Length: 313
Length: 313
Image 1 (cartoon, chains in turn blue, purple):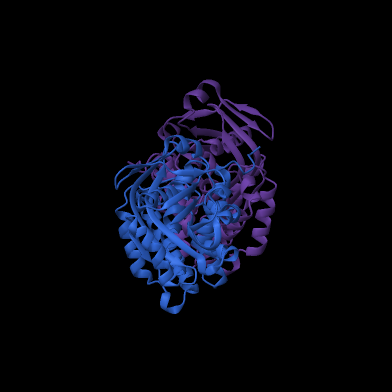
Image 2 (spheres, rainbow over the protein chains, first blue to last red):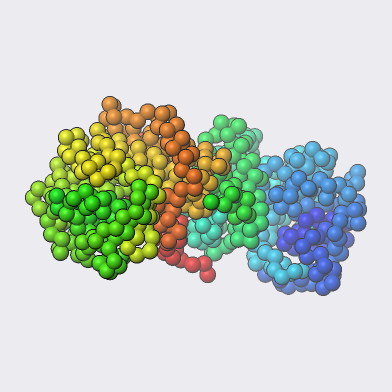
């Protein structure tokens, strides 16, 4: 299968490289590490075993051209640019998988491309970029794949590619529910990691007040999601909260990607991870005071961190 | 009048020094700047005119002994030590004025000393310490004085001392109301200045999200206060919010004392300014989600800032 990876950060590189090892013809659109990978190839230092790939990398999507599958792994902060980057790789039968964070991404894609060809993917993976051309994969790797119209058979085809590449891959019966379930972790832990002063999930879990706050944010997120999910798709709050806190307790000092971006003074995915969920919850009449406050704080901290706030005189 | 100033930071020094210039016999309990002031005296660089005072300074309260009036200007983070520092200066007729921030201080004093001799004072003043022995007074200086039992005649006697020393001084008919009114500014602006990434009131006012958050915090604070104020003492929310936002708009890039403490890695007055108000509001059944979240964030940031949070591994 001819696959184009649009946005080859750590997530795009890991999944794309493993799909290439599994025999697919994978083409990476790359910016930061383009020259390094062109010269030295792509190195993945992975908890599942290190490997090296003479990856086919490109600086513009027109050089890649139409593919059978586009995997878009851009950050949602680059969503405005996504259409122009993806379109040259999309033909009449191309499937487009948004392997991205947050809410509203596939809806946007479904405005640009035929909705039955749009998929959403959630990567549960601990991963960072290293020196140019190197990706560090610390743990996990599971993907959850959903179809924009919740066509399970179609989602299963995409998930099957990841399974064949060695990943744990499951199909989400409801893509919207799966998005909210991932937010139920990201909103408390990724965004508190920033607003509590750049701390790890372990440091959050050890503080009674922050742990209570994480729980309140998680409960609000689930309430927001349930307000727009069909009755049969609704999330059971108690069991998801329990499961996520139990998982997080095993993560140790994990640094969510939002924290890593913050430390590196890169734009945060504030709108897709906080802004859009807050707006949808409020539109459904759900009270989300902690999420709304967190949204305002993190949106400001992101701007302050990148020098976009006027300095004091 | 024989006056003991217990806790001679910038506030204690400014008011004590002006009372001394007005002819009172003022004795300062001092720690950080003791040697410098003993050697060089106390210098106040003030917007109302600079002055110098050969201040009588002491390292322990026993050297001061009983006074007619004790002005306690300790930070509330030192409240545990206050009784032992004040008591040596208290005789049977000594008045004790808590010129301190936050809620619950006079109640604590009224457990230690006769309640009819306990007063609370709120200083509305822009002030900082400078080099040892120097205080910088940038603006304002108004004090509001209340009596623990709301005896207006008694409060007027204390307020009169400040008036005679050249300050704008008024009597609070309800000390509790006056405390909540001051919190209605401190909770939004002092605590957001910390949690929004160490920013000034001007930077808060210029960001739509933070300004909305400040307003929400102010409204919650007033609701918390009104729940425990007698009917005739209740605060009119709309007019206080309007007045405080108008005042804050004139302050420019003001750095609240909580922010200055934070930048200097000193303990923040989290409990008296956030914790106690949150606990009282909740006890009265008032929903204060923004205040409660702010309390948890700022309490953690204070500990993180002072190296009291376990480092990541």
